[in-house]
Image (cartoon, rainbow, N blue to C red; front, side):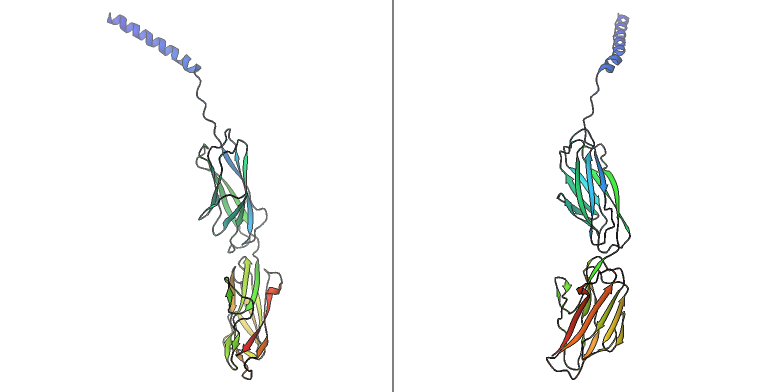
Length: 298
């Protein structure tokens, strides 16, 4: 009896094992869910960018998958500090971090559709000319099979530096820069006074080239004391100065020659004839290169 039951059970199992592969072959497998797949293309500035000015980086994020995005896509733009991503067109909210910034592409990017942003990259004023600046852009989408992010590199080159110079004779400053007009240039007859002369760089870049400065002190004054650094006295009232580089962006080179006021001068007398001129290859000639100044006897 036991043998008969065992034989019947083995026969049933044999039938099931024989039928299962055929049934498995005919059962349809579940299709993987459709997903969005993001790619990023870049168009960096084609022309060299002057340090301190902006170049445009065009970022194109395209959905190459079969499904519309259901979450926001994070776009991370790496741009070496101290440069910065200043703005985006069309406007988006930029989140800044140490080496760049990021923004979001809203959910709803359909298959084959592209989101385009024109990012304004400000190259730091301190950047040297004729160098290559490298960065990359990454896109992260939660539903993309490539969870590590898709990365595309870019580069731009810098042009020669540009600096716009302003000159003045005054110790007065306003809004972080010298005031280019006469200030407290006063002294008594026979007194020695310092003349606060300066060359200011209004940018956009650091000055990387030599500059030359010519100074004539006012009538009835005579140069005295130690000649300012990098300057040479070429007469009792004249100085020429040569600097290997001009001032940094939004900074000034200060030249403070000392003069003796003629003892025969009288109180209230204005001593004219002071001039200050600067020249440098980074700047185009302009009225800002020259100023007249005077000393008032008190």
